[in-house]
Length: 117
Length: 182
Image 1 (cartoon, rainbow over the protein chains, first blue to last red):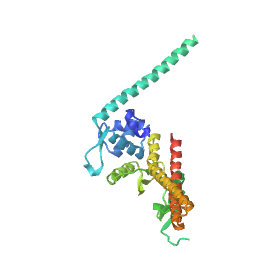
Image 2 (cartoon, helix red, strand yellow; image 1 turned 90 degrees about the horizontal axis):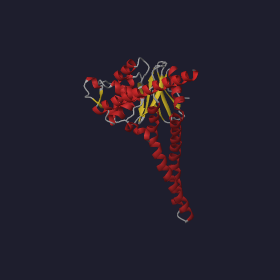
Image 3 (cartoon, rainbow over the protein chains, first blue to last red; image 1 turned 180 degrees about the horizontal axis):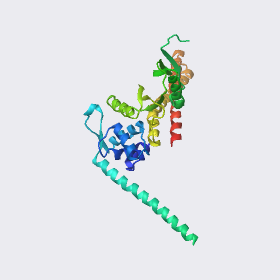
């Protein structure tokens, strides 16, 4: 049950993270998948069911909003103010995590160097 | 033997129990020129066409009529063509090697959470009615009510059981799937 409300915790899954990133500029389904693939140089590829599920959830959580339907009924989505806040926090959090990783590696190296001497 | 050369019905083990196997079966039929068209009674309806090398995939999603277009468009954008929808069940086809419809665990898990809801309630409600029906049958039988009345209770309870039992089995099958995805 808690899984359905995973948005509440404000931590994004990897998939949700990339979708939000792609919606800093309004895009519709195809453009979102294409952009994520480009941005990550093919490392992250998103399936349509995963995309659709998360779009629906993030609309409900008010992270993104559906734009006006103009061009041949394809709906573009874009981040809301709240969504922008979330993505900024998430980028921060993930950079901190990378720093933690680097530091841990560095410290482990220092310990083993020390032991050799 | 069926005489109709255009349409063919094949049996299904049930999507809850053998989703991957059933999708593979449809792929095999498609490679022989029998294309999945819609759901039939306890199985699939196939139509004769050109032999195709395509794969099938299944999604569960309860959608409003105005959401359906956007849903289909998203799948089309991912290379999956909608084939057939029945209530909350949707089948898509694509060329082999297309990116799967679900690419992460969390959303794949949610698929079965959506699938399970109806069966949970029908299992519970009809399970309860079955119990009530049998209780009423034994009560009326032991207290000298008319035979006709106790027979009505018995038939009622049996009919409820016929719905409750499959619902419970399907419910358990989905629960098992979710457990594996955790």
